[in-house]
Length: 45
Image 1 (cartoon, rainbow, N blue to C red):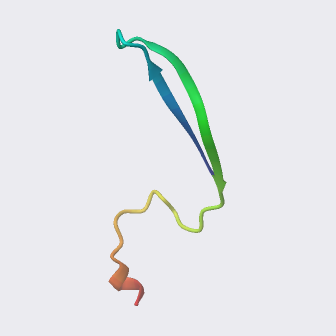
Image 2 (cartoon, one colour):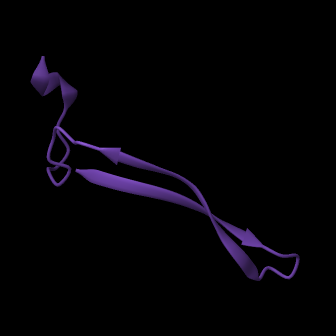
Image 3 (cartoon, rainbow, N blue to C red):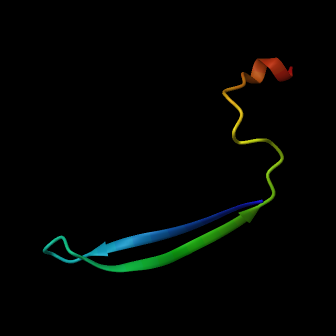
């Protein structure tokens, strides 16, 4: 299971962070091992 959350940092005119807004989140069941190295798509054909 993979969980992702996206936030947006908000800055004022003095480049000081004034907020950290929640935008969205995603939950997904992954069907592959994301820790595997690069695999060429031609290997699946």
